[in-house]
Image 1 (cartoon, rainbow, N blue to C red):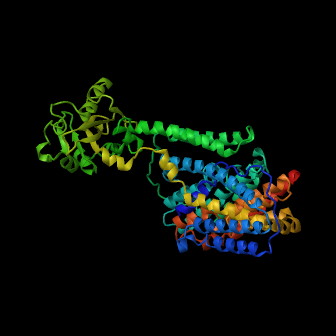
Image 2: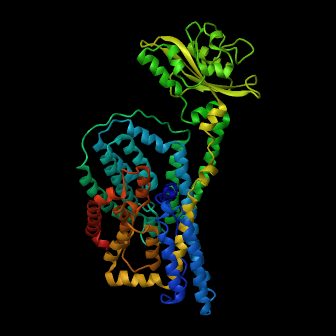
Image 3: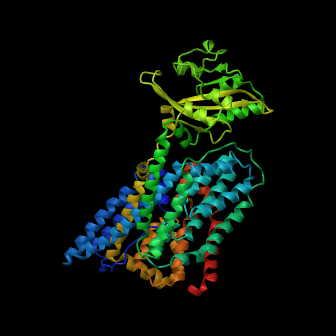
Length: 617
């Protein structure tokens, strides 16, 4: 599933830069030659293996990479046979330039998406939705609406996975609701990417080629909305108004998440400005944004490593495990000893006289001191320090001023942002273990229902344990997580289609489709074809044909190529991914049952476009 993950992961994020305006290499009509027929057969065989990736366990990039290389051998041989040693060279340079700009753009986009995912941006949105207690019908509409508007900024695959996790968490055992909500998410995510210049690979291809200007894309916003709303309205009638049980879930975004979101939007704007005002490839703007992210990631790394222990706790978004236990004490009246026993980490509690009330098993393991030797004493400092002194629990219990914390934990403490009057601190203890240990502490006063302090709890963690949960943010790790199989797949597709174009097949197809059938019918069929074949090679083929069409017709093919994949569950990466995550619930058959209403939305969106944009048709 991860292979398909970034197939849209680069797909729906801001626009890639395709193809410089170079004069096209000369094309001979070799469609009936042995060279051409061999290349065509090779492409058909290689591409037929792509949809079978999950069944035969052969990555989709491998057959198309092999086919691309062999096809260009055939191209070069065919032209050399005719005494032409330059045309094939110039033609493949054009294809390589197109791919290079696409590659750099998608690499930057994928890195941003991976960085936001690592900072818990998407997880926090999911947690917010599942904890609201919305009805099933509300969840259906909310997830569809969010999928429609998130997919132009993130990619439709990431969007589908995020919203799919929400409906599966809320829907639980209601298989009918989960299936309908997944279909709705797929349709909405695909429709949302269609009206944005950087919403899909197909739209960015059209934009970069200069067929449609940046602001002109928004002329198909209303048709895109119609494409989603028509089937959504029909499917919503099959959903009841029951309200599932609210799910308690809370995920905090990590340090720097909001800044990264802002940088991502700024990078999108930079790419647009590079294209519109500087007349430079958008990929250059995206790489500039990647450089800015790299510099900011250095700051994040320094921040999370400045105080090795406590910053790691907070950077991981798990900085207040103590909060739930304090709430438990206040709301249930449970004794402090019972609460400390339930904490899965080393922890102890003291009373208002600073005597140890409870010393849990984790503390016995960490310090080697049994509870019987500590309970009833004020020796909480003894396992850690050679001289008697106040430790963090003592300070928070007495509500000491900031100066005391600074004196006891200089440069290694801070107020806990999630719990009032709680503090985090860190220190190194050479006497613990063979080489000493860095420990982190979180301490907070425990109060009864009336707000009166009845003691304090302190939780202790080892830094190595925290490191397993919260490694430093590293931009190079985010780049390494880009879906390289998908990037190489794009390489194979672009060179395969470019090679077939040199044999004259795209010119022949353009004649049959755009001259004989007419652009409206041809562009409508492009969308239907994209439900079976990936829309990227289809759109690349159309752009390589370069039929003489109006702006309205280029917008039409952009719309249909973007939303046509919704007709079948296998027609888009979003659908394929959700079939994997909702296995046995959202299936090809479940989607096919609603294909008629999705097709109704497809037809309605085309008719609305032809009506409201008739002046540019």
